[in-house]
Image 1 (spheres, rainbow, N blue to C red):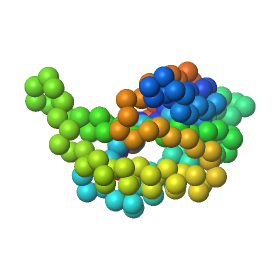
Image 2 (cartoon, rainbow, N blue to C red):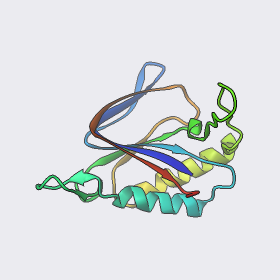
Image 3 (cartoon, helix red, strand yellow):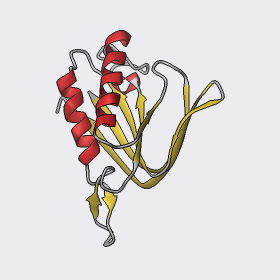
Image 4 (tube, rainbow, N blue to C red):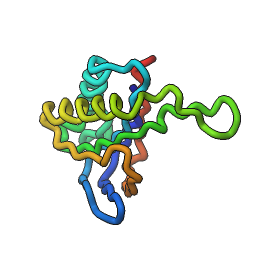
Length: 147
């Protein structure tokens, strides 16, 4: 599993001109599922996301997590995190999980985040989503369960 985690002041997600989700201060998490990923990979990723201390305290140090500072998460499926550009100019997505299984794990991880108590909203799996985000920092963390 891979995730790109971005600290934001706000974010919104639309499909076909319709607002689907929006959050205030928190995280936008772009989530990709690779072949062979499991619920155990998702559980580890969810624990990392909920507890990652990337929000500043009163002294400007990154000591707060999204859960400890009362933030929200916008959770977005993104198979393109598995794009391999090593050969040629067109990415290959052969390492991305098949859509049905990827959607199962996306929904599983979404529910697991909700169970942590952090307010979470999501995108639409497989849709052409338009996302606006107001990055904070910017702070961007890349997580790969294969590492």
